[in-house]
Image (cartoon, rainbow, N blue to C red; front, side, top):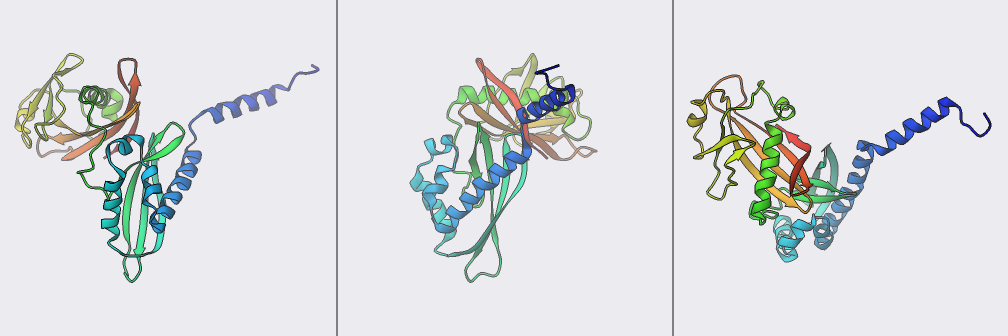
Length: 270
């Protein structure tokens, strides 16, 4: 027995190595808290350059610093920040959601901004910042060929058994997928793994309701590529009055895999 460890010790070591090799939610929360504290400090000090550096490279590649700086300046509007706090609201998969409460000097009420963060490798990167950015700050959407593959991977997951289980109403996969357009610039897919896809005009759910096994229509929301990671939002719209919510959906992350993209995690369900 000399030189051998007791079985109980070996089991403990094996369990420890297994635990350390798994994704650690507490570690992610701690790292995101540190990252967002640095962001909050930069906001209070007016260091927009440091705030800008915290955004994902895809954002910085397409959005010039001067434009971001102007947006922050317009939101602050010459006021001095007297107090600021932040809270990590939730972490789901690769997504982190953080609220910042801001009190301007001389104002009785607080204001807040809401940040969406992405765990890209070992680093939390800022993906979006509500109240300061508006929908004109679009990025990660130039590669239309890959955006179609990203949307396809997201749609494939949503219509899988696991994806449908995350939605309310005991949904089943339809025989024909009906997509409601948002605009002429929408992502277009002719089919998904042999299932035909039909696109209809915005607000038109009658084409969906008339089809067999159609409880709902679908609609692509934001699709965005961050290098080897991408996100896609898909809305699920009820075809009419009934037990289903009028609108629900998923935001999912996918990653590059060989010549395409594959599902990684669900960022949010509503």
